[in-house]
Length: 120
Image (spheres, rainbow, N blue to C red):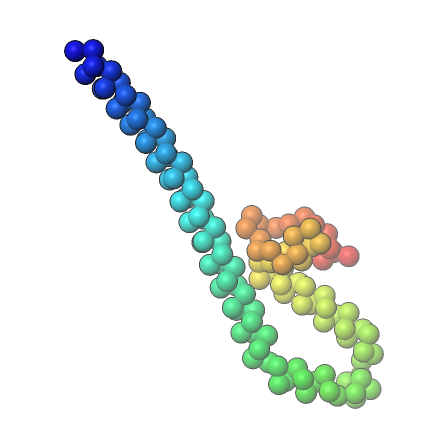
């Protein structure tokens, strides 16, 4: 009778360990699914940016080949304005532009570092 009772206790203990292992496995699967979803969103954003950047290449190259005097703007002022506009566009597409998280997808709303960088 003792052997049966000890065997039941061993099985119960083993079952508890299996249950704990399943709990750990469930948490790991949850983390992987969340990371996968985050990467899918980031991938979609990057595809949109790539598509937008590759479409106007011919137009951008034609404009870039014109001399600055014809455009009526000094080259430095144009470069600074375009750089700022590009960073603002990236930020509004959901990416960090600050030196802390540059290029990472913003997951939790606005970033104070990015906003302070844009306000300069």
